[in-house]
Length: 289
Image 1 (cartoon, helix red, strand yellow):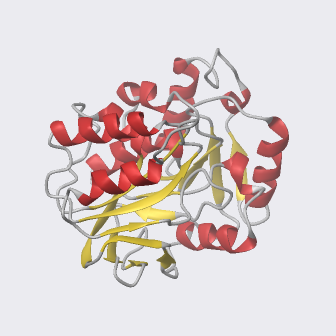
Image 2: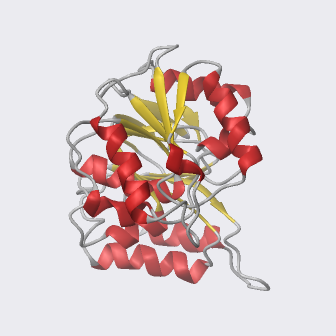
């Protein structure tokens, strides 16, 4: 995978939804303090719930893919719409993509080709991230090693190794049955989500299981599940998720600071990790390179 060098070109595009300009500008300023940032002209568009028409967003992404001098791109935000672009993209090289949430559609398409990418803050999130998250983001973009991440709760103890795959649970379920869904066999699966009631988390997970997408998974990492509670319910999303993932019979670690919470630590998808659920640690054995 291509890695960045300080002072080199970094693209910013909007493959999904529109965004708040103030938060976007703050994030661009963070990136511009280290790289030469080039914002795609289509990034500031809007069409209903999308950041512009599909044709404009796809053309913007394709220009980045075709630009051999560009090592990486960062998504402006998530929302919805990235999966609509997949049929239009000619993916001829492993351009590094940074983003999360709806950008999981791009990550999955990359991993289906054996490429790596970075699940981490989008531009509109960068301006509010603590210094250690920003530093870690730069380290990953530049191909350097990073410290392990700690979880808060052992759901099922054990130690396993495998490539880290996954991202947003909703997007994983949505891409089942398409050619952009990679095999998860042998992988440590990362999942996170926002605004999904417990029964919907159950439905998406069950869909993955019934489709055979969870066959062969060696471990599970649970990131943040933000605003996922049912009003006045006698159960929690945590209880539902833990019951579902425990049924796989593999090591599971919960409570990692990844996703839609206040802090979103970046990780390289497609790279080998060691999940030590017993010690509440996720170690990174590989980076982008």
